[in-house]
Figure 1 (cartoon, rainbow, N blue to C red):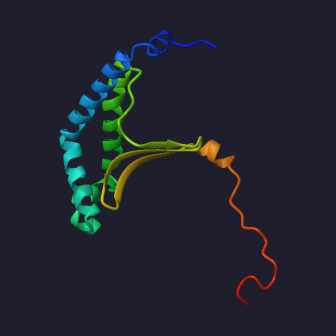
Figure 2 (figure 1 turned 120 degrees about the vertical axis):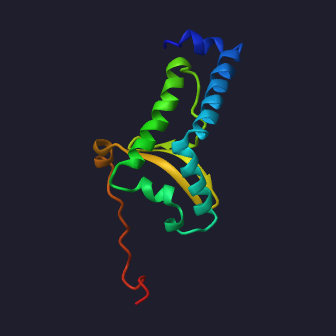
Figure 3 (figure 1 turned 180 degrees about the vertical axis):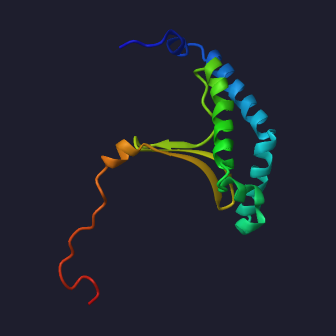
Length: 143
């Protein structure tokens, strides 16, 4: 097995990892100051407090046919990929999950609301078996 020298070095000195993560934390702070994000973040806060979607125009625009949501997603990815290109040991400071066919990356959370990027790998998702229910014996359906 080949272990990258930079990763091997972290066994005894994690300074490179700490510097990489510091760069990512600074990138996250810079992202939160982007005008395209500030309005969306404010909308998530209001929506998370119980407001209707109609009271959150920045969120409504994310679902508009003009592609505003895609533009925001591209801006987010480009912003953090720039840092990862310089600091490949860094981790984007967002919750994420992946199961091989569906990947999610949480952009924001407030109250009961979250905003996430979700990627579906259609080819791999097609290979996942459809859910099924067990056959129940007669009489267990409440009738």
